[in-house]
Length: 107
Length: 120
Image (cartoon, rainbow over all chains, first blue to last red; front, side, top):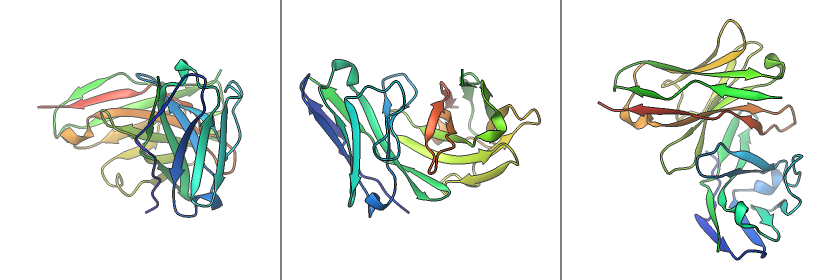
């Protein structure tokens, strides 16, 4: 079965750029999606189809996907961006896969 | 406004059956697939399966197939997740999520979650 691998944790200073990676075999040939989950809350999509931002998601969130790695980038990171981030892809046309999640700490 | 509202927290014993629900509003229910996602305590998201409310067609994650059933009720406004015999390891938060109509689709709306605790 298809697997997506994320680093367990990433730390960033306020105002700096955070990059969270998601690795999978030939992931660049698929679309990647990113979800933010804050403690006690349901996940929320922040990037879909590699690079698209849903309405309401700040411009500081961006995404890319090439080769075996998709990357979520948060520019000018704010304290409110501290959360768990999950990447997601479709293993096939009928099966969804999530990465293990990355805890973003803003300190 | 699109909303997915899930049923309340459950405390059950091992071996008992359980059905939890997800009710959609603010959109045409039959136009969007609904998925269930498990999150065990302190762990990540796991996709369990999905259902097309138009015809009740389902796809399951092989890891969950045979242990849970995803269904749509006759009103076609509620999607259920059910177990016939719970295990302690089923203790988790369960989310329903709507799949967008994009290709490929993504989870554009999520329910608030239903906490299931299985303990003797």
